Image (cartoon, rainbow, N blue to C red; front, side, top):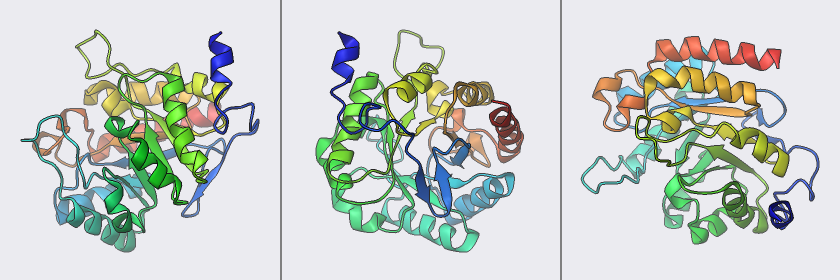
Length: 272
């Protein structure tokens, strides 16, 4: 019965499109069998911070820079991001450092501000914000859709349907860990999501091992496991001073650690 229910995925399902979708962004291709690496800080904190990290991750081989300008946080008293100023800093980095950028949108009212962003991220909390998904579907912008922390595979792909149904085929889904009874890690990274999504859907899948564990010491192992499982992309939090980060420092690795990780990840991708 479960297999039958999954066949109701009209646009994201394998029954509709057998071949893998390949999304071309700023001269790069996601889903073509290679490994795309997205890296950067959880939050854009300052001009010097975001430029320094951008230069470091680009030098190490990252394809895209991630950085949060709008930060939906569990507590209203935590750092909420630089908002519009953060987006403007990211656009400057894109122009001056020459690396495409990924950042999260939280409100469709801000779409005009995101017109030049290379990949717009929908965070876990907004996976079922259907009004936002429909608005993004009316654009042709590449969308990175993160799995909700209690969402099933079907719920994730059905959320992707909202974007696809509005005419935007450029969707990348992202496994970022789910909430389980385990408390040692922030979330439980579901490596099985990679082959499962690939069986069910033609959409590319990224894996975020930083949110998936919440612990920087596990990011390397989980990244390599994700690549071995067949992930099309990795999304990794990198900060030049994790101990001073305004958000998610405990799950951020340093630029030097990232440089080692990316070489090993690409070597595994070549083997498989």
